Image (cartoon, rainbow, N blue to C red; front, side, top):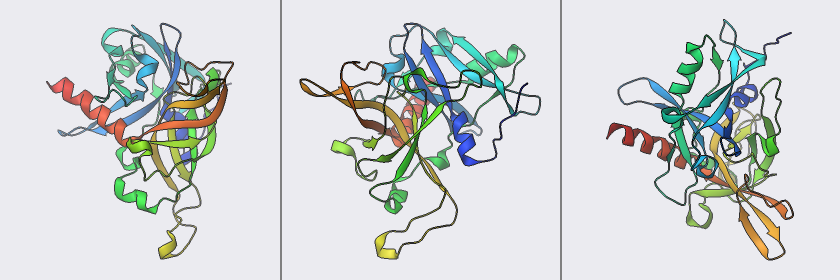
Length: 277
């Protein structure tokens, strides 16, 4: 019997911001759906993941949750869409060191709807992206959620991802090693590449020490970026490993490198700029 999952809470909606990505050559990763407003009005939906998940792949598959006639997700119904050609043309961030790529999902969603299905997903809107001035209210250590498909694990019947919890291992306000990144202390496994990292604080704002400490108020939720790679220890020392290509005999250090949210926005803007030219 199909059961509709509630989607009226922040936590439940975060579960529907991701899609499982599978490429033709066997790679599996996570994509986060972001919305971006167009200058002429309206907005588009874009799937964002890591370059190393999709680079050199000729086609792939995206798994969507299906919706009922009222537009609500049905727990045991999903649709795997195989994408080729224009529907699988990824655009990478212009900086080679930023492991972020994006694609418009309009063609994918249109293809599913033409086949008589409704899809359900939630998007990360611009107001969830942490702006520079808002980082002043963040503490040096914050609790974070990571949503995705670690080691390929997810609820295959209900098409629901897995949520992992961790903390910021370096202050978000500071660019780690002078690059638009930060570290998180969380378990990183194959399939986690591209997972969105959220600051989710249901208790509300925590004030800075110079203005006093208080709890309560509206919950805080911000999109901080996407996981790119993680550190692992081998006999030869430390190695930077992409979660889709982890050496099994090595030991993961549970330190993930996250590309900051602004690089996601920059990638989408780069995609739109290329389309206009």
